[in-house]
Length: 382
Ligand code: SF4
Image (cartoon, rainbow, N blue to C red):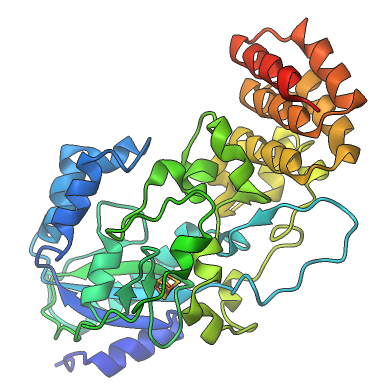
């Protein structure tokens, strides 16, 4: 007879598979589903309509819908690099900034084989007819709420799960199983206390007092999930971020406390990704984009979204030496979304090269949305 799996065995196996955090919770409804539903009702999920289908709501309300006969959920967290722990490259170039979870390979590709190994271990040691499902940000699961109930940490004011032994630079994953596993104890304390550093640091004030985010103002949403125009009033707030944002985590004292340059080795940065050279990125062809970001989370933004962000970041540098690159984009880039944001960026930089490219494109660009960006840019260009 196989011996029943205990928590220590499970945690050891999870650790061998690279997961730093591991806990167990039942498939009862997550404690904060109602708050989540109110967040949807207020439209705070912006353009992420996939979050608000009837099935997505039902499954998040009742995790038993995810797996027939599901009894337990193994909640897991894997640490990724600390964005403060890696020094900036010494380059005399305008650089962008990529959120640290996206520096290396995509966890959506990396996690499933590891999660399946853990599911197989549970299945092999328990009973015939055992069922399991694995998730990592890939289905209708309130991951953070389940992780909190499994004792992995607490939900900070910045809405991230924060481990009291490691901070918040973790990616979450789950194995749903039909096995009856002993739940681990939730962390009952809110260790944010009176701190409000993340709220003060957010450049778009997207962190709300009820511990939710106004996604339509969050730089992570605007640079990744948002597939269209970035509202012009929020573009300056992007600063140098070209994919995601770590600001609310970088200022968190729990991450400062557990800062570790060796953490998150599984997500070792690819060359040039943490701090890409903006001028080069703006000229990436579709083939070069696909090659550079093969198996990378940056694919999520697609080339046109990424180059849109790069154009905005260049506009925010105020560096007129980059105007020829933006002019090249405005006059030859096939994607209107990128041309429109390149026009905005040229309007921010101003100067002879910028004005002349805007005037040339005003008479030739076939897209009405780009034309209107050009007109506004010409009016505002210094
Ligand atoms: Fe909580 Fe302060 Fe961290 Fe925000 S910065 S999540 S308030 S501890």
